[in-house]
Length: 569
Image (tube, one colour):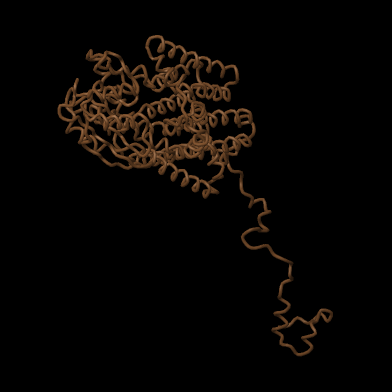
């Protein structure tokens, strides 16, 4: 079949004897329309009205927590808490001197309060928290489950702090930010360390988190509701006097949350109610107790140390620098744009830039309070614990930063995974190092148990752990031990001697039935004086030397016993 009727369009190849089939095939080649788009990206049919996708309903982007989203986020929170518990429980060591002292003091206070025993310890004069609060609770748990039980109580407090952090961060932002904030807080060295450490700090951090949780939830409600948080805040200060440093943060947080919902006048009203309630309770506590001297000596008028500024700054940076840097980044990003990447809210639904900046600055800046105070005092004592108080408040803004780095719908998870691995590595290594700073007395206590007898007077460093462990066996008590920090000895001439002269006179007179020394690579002046006097006096002999190794060095315990008939008093 051919189509050659029109000479004007006749193909010259036809007249030359080409095959008809080729001519027909050539006429059926479609006309080239130019470059074509790659399939799968652009379609001509997309311009048709019936092919246009409908508008996504706003319910699909709702910021309100759905039932499924709530279940998933809570399940992930449980996983975080389990990981935190495992990382804390992996730490092992014998009782630290503060742990032993607080638990023993709790037993003494129970005897004093409920059984009429004399208050011989004078704990209220130098403890950094009320001796009738945490120590009594710790002693009650110790009676039932020992030191392990008291440390598990600290773990419960720290797990509760992480859960409360998740809850009030979720209220301030959303589930994703709350999970990320809880995750980065749960692996900091202070959180892991305090989760297996029997001191005031875990309970105080939990009460701070509980106060913040209450205030965030009741801020939009009735003006009197913040009074519900006042007893908790006052109890926090009673447990740990230094926790008063964070009361302004709690009050400002209440004002900011209320201001965003109710306006400035109502926000200030609620802040004044909360502040007044806390002030009244704390005033009553100071007036009805004798804790004022302890508050001055341990907190407000604490003696200055000699730690160099560079070392303090380095310690602050390595223990809390990562979370603080994330919090600062979160503050900047949140101030620039309100949305967190998931909910495309309009400008009218978002808080003002000034409010966002104020919230971020308050929460992030709280992390600097404890470091600034200890830098002012030039001391690093307990800095690794105290830094965790401020990190609790900075964690929500760190969660905001991680949310922004991740992007909408987990678009860029690599950065968050890298930060998480870095935070986990720092937290695990630093908590293990800090938990191994003090020497393990596991071998010392059995040796002392062979030599200590009821009624004997001992000089010891350490002495808190021996008193705690040996008092449970009925071998000794707190009044029979003298520490290397203070001595009041009445010499032969009836003079009261203290300091180096007191130690020299007591050893020369053979006053002690035994001496325990912790001799490390860098002994203090008092340890060196006592050791030299023990050798020179000729009244004591070195009975036992037990080598130990810590995360920062090595040393040995020495047990000195009197020679036969050496005691003169």
